[in-house]
Image (cartoon, rainbow over all chains, first blue to last red; front, side):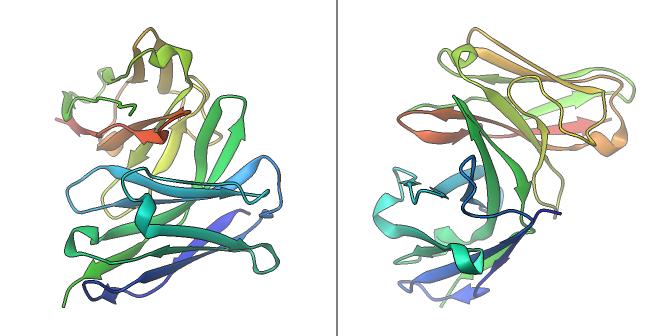
Length: 122
Length: 107
């Protein structure tokens, strides 16, 4: 059974750094055809992709947020960590991690975590 | 950067067919997928690789993708299908792209 679970602070102050952890089970972060992404949805807005990481440590970031994001993984702990610096109230959102399935030209999210709501406020 | 455009809202009567479009430059040359998100819940994959329905997704959900438009079709729409729907594709320069989402209302 594949599961992903996000954890992290529910409240951060403006300018602080957010650190979120995604703990996965039911699959390995060393699987070549899978990866993990972070995605968020701000209130009243659409889903927004943030970053992904694959078994070979290949990483990619949203072009608009690249300067603020860092993604990493600890395969032995089955965890993927996302850090976002210089948090602002507009970053208030539910943050999801999701498993990626990839093949030639194919990329989709087949399992999602329950999401964690992060509020940015002083 | 690559963009996907969806209508903000679609309304359908129970039992009728709902069609939600997703437009992007030469989208038919890429693979499109669709997610359903109900209030307070995580997104659920309903269509992958243009037309594939994951296990557990009802047969009334189908997808197509050609030219510049991908379409999610829900046949015999039920009240439980009321949700936000998002298309998504992969682009080599923008990486992961989501559409702006469509709110499906079943009247």
